Picture 1 (cartoon, one colour):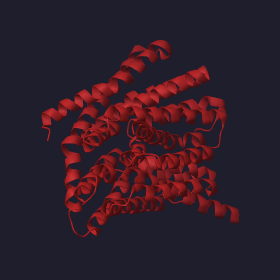
Picture 2 (cartoon, helix red, strand yellow):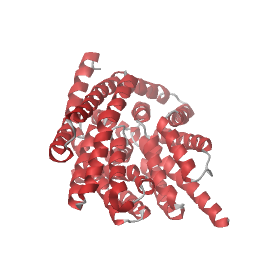
Picture 3 (cartoon, chains in turn red, brown):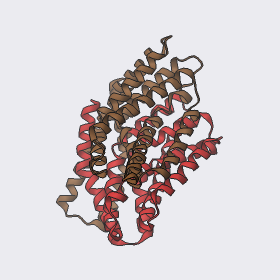
Amino acid sequence: MVGMGFTLFLMGVKIGMLPMGEGIGSELSSRGSILFIVVVIFSISFLVVVADPVVRAMTIVINDVSSDSISRSALLFAMALGAGIFMVLSMLRIIYNVPIKYLYAGSYLLVILLSFFTPAEYLSISFDAGGMTTGPMTVPVILALGIGASTVMAGRSPLADGFGLIGFATIGPILGVMLLGVLLH
Amino acid sequence: MATVVESMRNAIIEVVQAIIPLVVFFLIFQAAYLRYPLNYFLRLLLGMALAAVGLVLFIAGVFIGFLPAGEDIGRFFGSFEEKWMLIALGVLLGFLATYAEPAVRVLCYQVEKASTGYVNSRLMLYTLSIGVAVLVGIGMARISYGIPLAYIIIPGYLLAVLLLFVSDRDFIGVSFDAGGVTTGPMAVTFLMSVAVGAAAMIEGGDPLIDGFGLIALIALAPIIFVMSLGVIIRLKKGGE
């Protein structure tokens, strides 16, 4: 059943979500307004993370294991918000041509710093949150969106700039869940 | 334990909640900017409907089969006196999960291309699988002995930051994406439930603190490995 559902889901993503992502991505670049790009990228990343099957299944598990002490909707919100913000940063990086290593180094150091303030029961989950947002819905749509947008933007190479998009988007949810833990305690 | 019917019903509610905002967003975009012809538009909607049905089956299946099975396996291996059993299980599952993941193979080919053939994709596949296997093993050892995740993950992250500055530029983006690639949906749901099950059996273990964190290690393995590869490539380039 898992396999069958997954196959159907992938077919659906290919027919429905991927062309949507690409269409919106190229629409973005043809508009050229940075504000417009930021708003749309943020909304799509947010919605896609909320809709991702792995994220949905695992947040239920976390909620169960914590015997309801960690709210599922707060978790979903924190992860989606983090992914949305980091996707926007990723796009801005491509537009302004910032070397990828500074962004990674900065955000990893931030993760390490925040981990000292995160309560223990949120720490493991927050690191896992990064791996969860690389689900089968998030990855194809974000890639399609990013490649669609970066090809038109000032002749950037989709290969060099397209890589790293997913990896960077996963840092957002880590920070999101850590902040959630810090704020709630 | 929820019945099959109940799981199906819950999964349907889940998916409707998940997919409606995305569809609404798409409808607004279609009306305001995209203006696709009706035929094409209906095709995209059909695709989304298909994805929704698949999602219902996937989520229901995960909760009926995958998670309980994973937790049972975790509890079974976690209850042994010999802790190496759990670690060996972790190594085996980590290797298989990476080796069997189609997206990992795609990535290996990309790296072979990016390195202009210098990095053989099969070699890369085996080394990635072994890398993940080792880290899942470490993750299971952590659960067995109750070592805090921070002691493993923070040095790992620091190493990654360090590698950022010595690795070949072309390998950085790919390495972080590889972290996303090894955390495929099957691997995540299954390994996570094994870890939660095992943590529940370990004396003094808290499933919430000890059971999670495995996925993070799986994501970290390729980051460190692929960037290390980038360092080697860079040294070779410099030497010529």
